[in-house]
Image 1 (cartoon, rainbow, N blue to C red):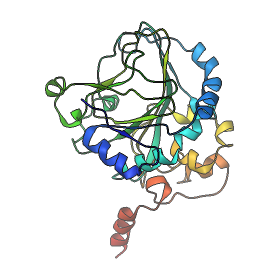
Image 2 (cartoon, rainbow, N blue to C red):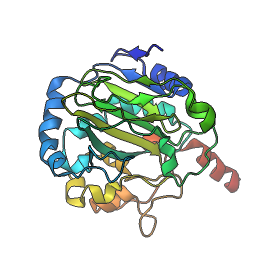
Image 3 (cartoon, helix red, strand yellow):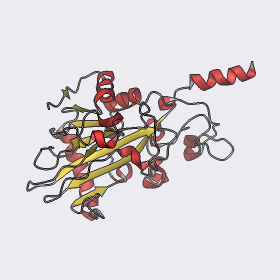
Length: 291
């Protein structure tokens, strides 16, 4: 089965549509070596200190290194890359707000076996989301080249709406891609890390996003200490969760805006939508009540 790839100047809506139809999309050469070199240098001591996985599913020769916003300033460029935020915004446009779900560098060492394929949305206590409702949008950036030999991610295209027994029969592809490329995949598609039969590690930067009303997989408010968070720009902070997750979710104290609470300024919550824009649907609801 051939693997569809997009150029870095692709329209994000085209990426989003392909992702809806197939469960994955690969955009090649989105950032250069200077970005990935900087991130690799910042992350190296933290990766070295990370323990291997707890079991075969986690990977006994796989390290997962999180808290990237605080530890690796270069990761913030990937989190807020315009192609990514535009694609994610379109893919999750049914929600009032989008938030960062997790940041993690996954290092698959030589000798690791193939991970059991799975659906990421199972993290939400195996809640049976409707087949047409996407709760998350994931990215995997290639910090090293991804090859079939070193464990490039396996994807079973189109399995997002299939029952498990049917999905298990679908032929898998591997997301081989060069360093600086990014794989998008949704929370429903079957996927998993590949076996590393090479002599070097495969490293991917897993940055995922979710609708604003669910709990984050990585708690961004503790992963990034407040003293660091206060140095970040507002758009990144909103993506991290310093905004309303929906019209009545996420305020502080006496309905104070979470970003204002972090900054120590005055500010009441307001109805918000995607990336902080006003939620017209709820505004109309309030108007109807007043009328």
